[in-house]
Amino acid sequence: MSLIDQIKDAGIIGAGGAGFPTHAKLTSQAEYILMNGAECEPLLRVDQQLMNIYPDEIIKGFEMAGRQVGAKKAIIGIKGKHHDVIDKLNERIDALNVGDFVEVGILPDVYPAGDEQVLVYQLTGRVVPETGIPIMVGCVVMNSETALNVYKASQGIPVTEKYITVAGDVPTRVTVKVPVGTPVIDVLKLSGIEDFSDYAVIGGGPMMGPILPDINGYVTKKDKGFLILKKDHPLIVRKSVTPEQARRVNKATCEQCRMCTDMCPRYLLGHDMQPHKMMRVLNYGLTNDPEAYKIASLCCQCNMCELFACPAGLHPKMANLHFKGLLAEQGIKYKPEKTEFEPRKMRDYRLVPSKRLIARLGLKDFDQAAPMSDIAINPETIRIAMRQHVGAPASPVVTAGQQVQAGQMIAAVPEGALGAAMHTSINGTVSEVTADYIEIRRN
Image (tube, rainbow, N blue to C red):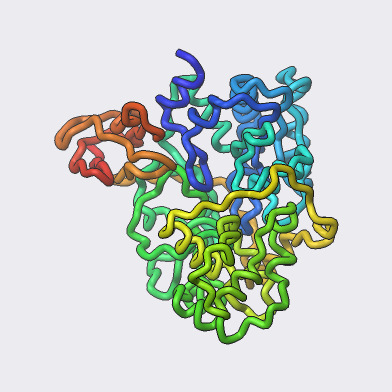
């Protein structure tokens, strides 16, 4: 079986972000393959620990993926502050005799170093075009957990487990490995909190992660962390603002200082994303002129404009999303006017240090270690969502009442579609099969 088929059968998707199926990404031919080990979202601790605990497996999986796409160089992107991990990676690269192909690339400790377009520029000096993806400049990007899963797939092991950091305003901060489909509440209770009535939970990092509307969901393959904060924490209050509230405040208060644009990571790469112009269009009610707001398509939703740059605490990202929605409703797609881009001259002076961002978010007291724990979570019931990835939902291949074993495929990629297979993470009995999920009860 080819590596691509092994990866497809294992159900590997991007272990963070949108969850793009890895087998489809690795069908491209690229000059570089890049590992995103930046983990630039504050308080998350998964990737840095995985690279320290499983360096050989991650390096081997990364090398396999690089050879698959025909890359001339495989670069592991990691922040320079992780000295011990960098030393470990360099030592194992030499021991595995892959130093002519795999190398470590040092990233600055800034946000958003993990944005894939920022990562591509930092490691190769190339700028991905507007609305483009890394392959357009000869690059393929994956993160460290995905590389680990590629190695496991080569050994016939599918994706049934997920590494997650639990952090925030909690007694215990921890990083754990849990079965995919585990009830989220079981993971949250590892924090030492039992009653969450006074808390809100952010799914993912504090910058891009949304507040979970319901903590009674189930872990997916692309979950990376859960950040638990008191409901009155300023970050939770900010993230709780509705789109309508944001539009009212934006229209009443924006003074067009353009700080949102000057600090925008995509603008600094040379793209035409200018949030202050979207605020202006909103203020003047120019919603009937798509030409005035078509650049909203370029927003990567990193939240730099909204949670750091704006001196008045306004909501430029929400303005961008409002206009992106209008463009989608009208079927209008942004068409770049050029194909080559250069970073703006002031870029190096406008990078935001992680520590400064953490302080601005009010998270300084919670910026502590979340060590990897071997604590075992053994859920009695799991639910495997059929829509955990980019593309078509998986198609169930089991029926209610059927006995299944951990690692068994329970849903396949639809014929001819982009998608990812699903596997059960426990031994048990299929108790329910729907178009949205498969529920399994432990035997």
